[in-house]
Length: 98
Image (cartoon, rainbow, N blue to C red; front, side, top):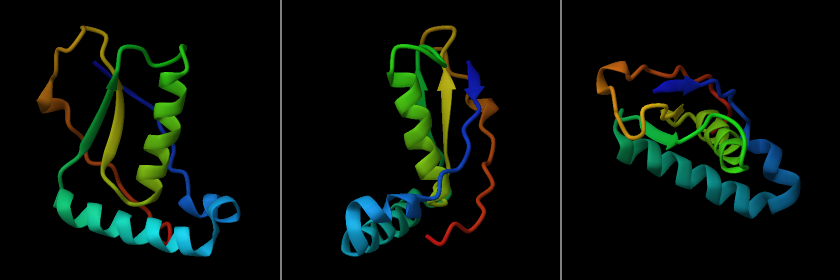
């Protein structure tokens, strides 16, 4: 399995499209998720790193998660569902206002 490079995406980019009230709800939900995860990392595994549409959407969604200070990552499962749990890495979060 190989980690797919994902860049943080600031959720504030959604503000003009979803409005102030929904942005506030999004920030509150992200805070609750961070608390419930309690230091755990969410893994998003896809069979490929690119192509087919899902990989591209996944990278963008994971970017929003990282931008919301959630510990998450995207991986391409080259060996078909063979997980190396020793390979978990912490993802640093810069404060994105969430």
